[in-house]
Length: 129
Image (cartoon, rainbow, N blue to C red; front, top):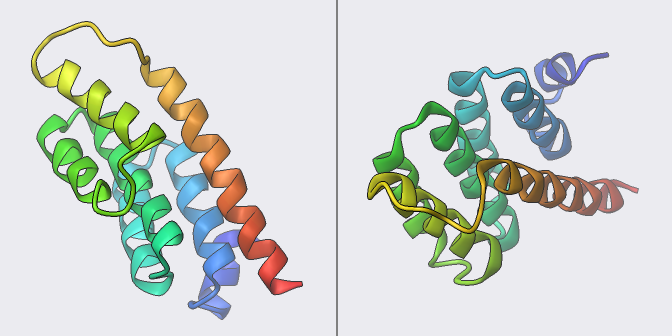
């Protein structure tokens, strides 16, 4: 069964929702990916899991080039994390808003989010076992 079929059968399956959000983002379907990250945030409210969902929403808005919305979400993420990836997202978005150079590239952000996704998925997969 595909990830989306699993979600039809088990709508509260956090691991399937995580995979679906990632897949929709990879397929460049930002509206659907955004909705999936929002639903993941509602079904997986633990702090580190919520942070993953917010980071996913930030990446969606970066891909849409909606810098103001991306900035608002990144600022929201700072209530959970003020280091590393959240800070890199803030720096990148700010550089786009103010037409400045940034030490971090969009590709580096995507790569870092992929690592976060893998770790998030691993945590959920281990919880299921």
